[in-house]
Length: 286
Image 1 (cartoon, helix red, strand yellow):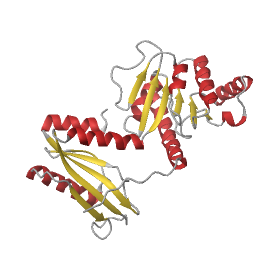
Image 2 (cartoon, helix red, strand yellow; image 1 turned 30 degrees about the horizontal axis):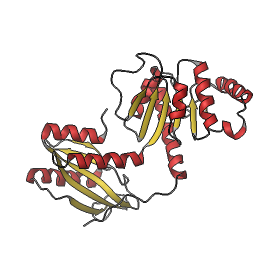
Image 3 (cartoon, one colour; image 1 turned 60 degrees about the horizontal axis):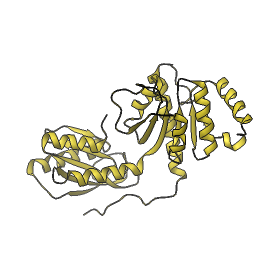
Image 4 (cartoon, helix red, strand yellow; image 1 turned 90 degrees about the horizontal axis):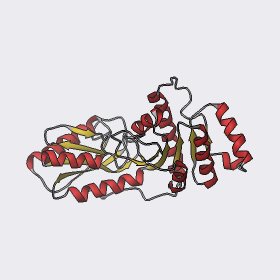
């Protein structure tokens, strides 16, 4: 599954040019936040969404007109969703619509990747079995940057999502390489390996979420073993086992992965809420 920058590159390669619609600033109640994008192709198709409704319909029309006329200068639009468009949301959305071709592609995709990196939260995923593979796919369209570890030969699929980086070698050593603040998910094929990864992760003390696949019985057994190794109290707080949003029934890998992905989105929200306030992305709108 391609990320937005790669998709933009592929469309320019195939059609010569396309239009990129980006929400650059918002105020009040709006369907999508700043940074949401939509790529509009020359053939009339599009990828992504800026929230639907009349706002998106008007933006599509302007983007298609830009491509038909060959207009080079970016267009800046500001819409008040209630009075201007009759949408129930009462906020204000500022849009940038720009034509992208071979001459501007590198600069635009570099900017997109930098913006996306600021929105993504790192995930360290351990295990490339059925659940690990299903989870990697579930996280593909979501705002995560995945470091995916498994030591087994041929464990990884032939094709992996664009936001995932495969890592072979000793998974326990990968814990040391994981970025501070990462969300860890442990779904390996081996309980002893699970314990070693969890021990290394909690010992580092820099991960807000260490999710372990398994039952409450498995958690109790691991907590006992970790306590014997000297990890108690607050050091165990990040450990989550069982993992996944409660109430989602089903043991199929895709169902389990959906529950874990939903829980990671909740954790992402907590991580971002606790992070130092960053300046909101915005642009002056002409």
